[in-house]
Image (cartoon, rainbow, N blue to C red; front, side, top):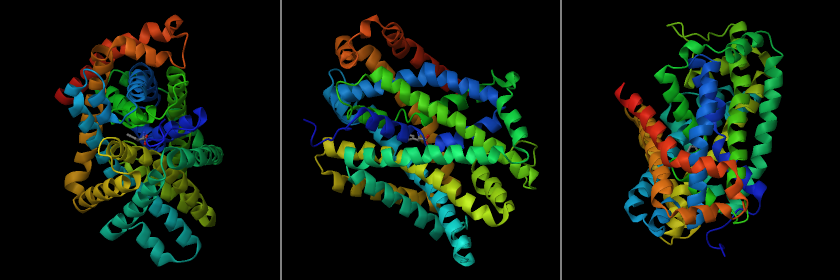
Amino acid sequence: MSSVRGEFSSRIGFIMAAAGSAIGLGNIWGFPGQTAQNGGAAFVVVYIILSFIIAYPVFIAELTIGRYSQSNIVGAFKTIEGGKKFKFVGYMGVTAASLIFAFYGIIAGWMLSYVFEAIFTIAGLTEIANWCVDSGSVSRNIFFMGTFGLLTMYIVSGGVSNGIEKWSARLMPILVFILVAMIVFVLMQDGAFEGLVFYLNPDFSKITDSKLIISALGQAFFSLSLGVGTMLVYGSYIKKEENIPTIGALVTIADVGIAFLAGFLIIPAMFVAQTNGVQIYAADGSLIAGANIAFQVLPGLFKSLGVVGPVFSFIFFALMTIAALTSSISMLEVPVAYAVDDLKINRKKSTMIFGLIIMIVSIILITNMDLLFGLVISIATQWLQPIIGVFISIFIGWVMNRNHVLNELKQGFPELEKSMFFKLWPWFVRVICPTLILLIFYTSVFE
Ligand code: PHE
């Protein structure tokens, strides 16, 4: 039936692909960084709560709309009764996914550049190794962004089961293995314990801080790949006999679980770095965060390990690159699925066209870093993702025919009406999610 559009071949295939999309730099780098900045475990608690009460219901909404419509985020609104007025939300989604890929590809390129730096260092080619990590070099930034972009395009052009699913299923187990192995190693080093205390000891005075709550919501949305149409289109590739609430819950748990686990790597690693003489506090006394964790503190730690340093550096940045790749393919899939479904352009061509357009946007960002980089990140993740999330909740809660929604969920979940999910979820998407998102959004914009 779905031979042109494609379909995930199995439940585990879908889980790997969706978890691959969700688990990315947002988990392994963004989450520990946000935690370090927002008072340790207090942030973790708020993030976990918001993931389950806001992000999970929206996630189920996206999967359901996708599977019901058998379409991408634009096509879904075009075909579902009452959706025409929401078509602009579809275009916003395609734009958001493309913008996210444009900046994400640059950061992923930096991760890849450190993989090569390690290889060249081991090979004794110091000069090329230095070029790989020369953050001021435009050619270096473009080269690694482009290489990462081409890798993403290669996988997406392979199709749903033969590209996205196959590569997610290959890479995700490697990712988990490397992550756990690195955690074991880091926790055995001097200084790690101090990091654990910082991570797990909540400063509850910060829990009502509006900045903390806003960051936690943004993190939950970004981390589950919501509000751009990624999960909607992945939903359209799930078989009808699958139970959406259950597999959605599994993916949410995996996503939150890996973020939590990554905290056991990054935060203790920072304190180990400090023990080894690397500076981890900024001039104002706050813990170093953001790009500097990955590109300053951790490389400092690897250097302090001596000859084995480059090996650890290679493993760590390979982990980051893999995490980024299984996410970036799901970003590119949003415009590609739109082109395949609605513009009737074949997958290879669609991938070429959108991949190249987005890379051009990336080049514009690279050459106007100070002006545009942060701006695009905040437009896409702080504005577009939550707003689209609100529209999706309102659409499934108030506009879509209630019986159609329930029948879609019932396929693969025959006992739906007897479940707790059935009692709660409709109210969450109708009232609780839109209200809470708007409220948090309002405070973030007008505080
Ligand atoms: N969830 C991914 C991460 O945590 C990012 C992402 C956002 C992927 C939006 C797809 C769509 O890194």
